Length: 251
Image 1: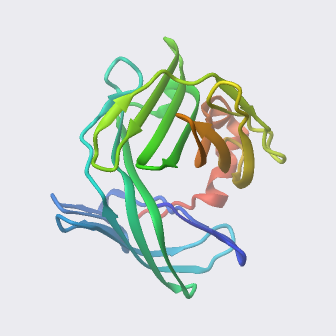
Image 2: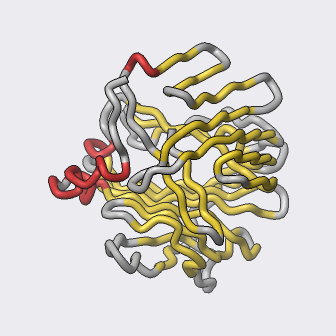
């Protein structure tokens, strides 16, 4: 379970790979080692109990996600049915109560899922994704470069009641590359409107997570943005670095 905290006191990151025996799953619960997600029909409760990397520290607490609406809109990203994405709760309220570190807050949240039958690096060269809050709901942009079928751009507007509307993807809007690992970033914005990076949350050898200022569907908006380079991920030197951020336990 990947947990990342960003704030004035610094960044904390946990993503421990675990063996099959550490997985427990029912129709309403998914547990991975000491952490678990539980759905009670109204809210998703996420109990976190992880150790950060590369500098060990404890991340322990609870997150409660309350969807405004549930969305049943799965999308095939590759055209062959091997990779799928579904925005389950594009507009939600979250309550965070952390014990270690001692933090509490509430605000806007988002919940989605990806699943597939082959490794991501086999299906895609790269992608850019973003989710922006709008006046009533959210806008989500997905721009992927497939290995066998070129580029696919997807633009969704999802209202607060869960209604999904596709719209024509806006024109490309360049973003600055990351300063350390030089990951290319790009998004799309209304014609004549620029987009810019407000804050880089993750600058890694193959992945960048950022906060951007943009303009979509006639509204100025703040979006969470990610860029993923699977060409970079495939390289041997990157694979050698992974255990420093993603330690692996056999159980």
